[in-house]
Image (cartoon, rainbow, N blue to C red; front, side, top):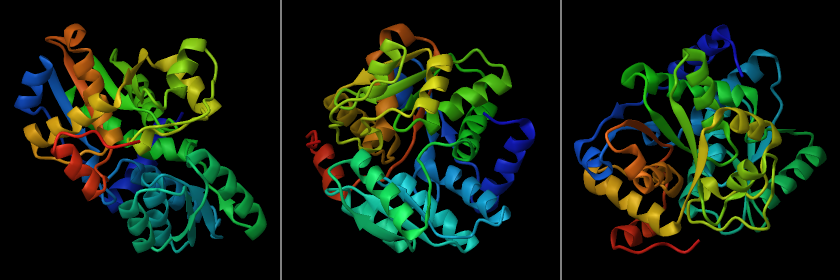
Length: 321
């Protein structure tokens, strides 16, 4: 996906805006999983999620190329915070399209970052189609949720994790549009590690799992999960090609399993995980028998969860999708 020189460029851009995030092996999580568990805390970035890294790299390189016109993208929230955060740093206007019923707190965060927010469509993929139509009508550049420069940015978290934790037996990564898992695969390969990269999807948004089993992209009619970062029903073909080649397997987790992982993170680490951020831990716990005594990484991809939803989770409930 990128060369060593491109990685160094991405690192310079990312670390000009934020420090590396921590990775800890929390004892209580290790006890719960029966394994040595390294948590990569991407909930500690300036926007509370890993996506900001890709936005920083893409927008900085866009500016360097002289592409200073307005941009537009579609999101459920974390990509949509990444782009305006990075765009504001280089003086570029941003418009974000999100679906009806999107997280109110993520919407507020996107507006606070200076984006024009348009709310339309019943899910992410419908919002994405509308964003592309608006781009054509207004003369804006549409930024997809997957692309080389986005991967170049987010892969820096995987290099940080491997640099601190060393060679792990496995790393569990949530999958939305695919930049996180593809960046992790790319880092593993560049470093020459034997770590298995395991993708994680929600049972109600399992297009990638179906695609992996079929060996080709398979779309679904719905993406129903409270883990909005994984609520995707159309698989990106380019991302899938890398996942098919470099992932060991895809684990599907239920809403209840994700909910329990959110609670476990708070109980064991006093840290907040959104649904997609907790899904890798849920997958590791589901495979605790096979992973017993091994060394595993889990990507806590973000902590941007609405307060009422988080409160219901702490009360032992599973939020509606």
